Length: 144
Image (cartoon, rainbow, N blue to C red; front, side, top):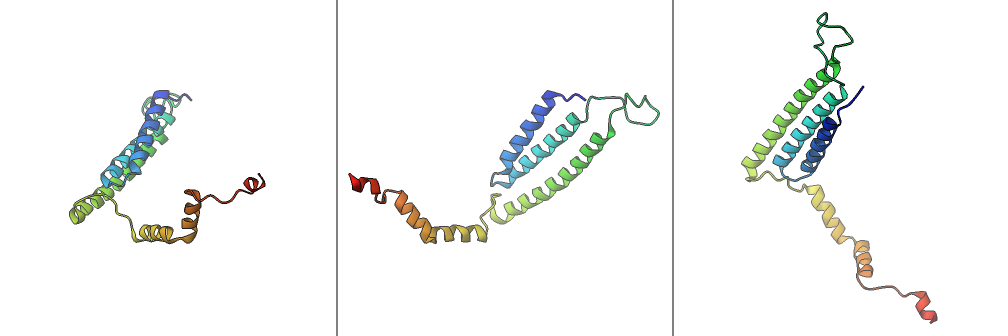
């Protein structure tokens, strides 16, 4: 079975751009990233499905000439799942825009608590104090 290198590059590019956008704080960019990842996965399914053949209806062609219907079914399923997820995320972004006037995801309470504990941590302060210029005595310097 041969795979088209161009389709694989397109698949990798779409998924890579989608992951980059998915890591942003804006829900609009997360939505665009999810769409790109979904389309990249669909292209990957079609590329892995092999070369195009005749329709997969029973009795319409020789079984050797028929296209594999499984990748087509997987693509249709992935399209439906992506559509549902995009609709849910679009509703979340719209509601966030209505409530806050922006679609950026805010830090939650746990993130703020972890950041506060990191600032209050005495071992972190001691470590940063020694690494920022207060060097400890070197025993080799005393011997000279």
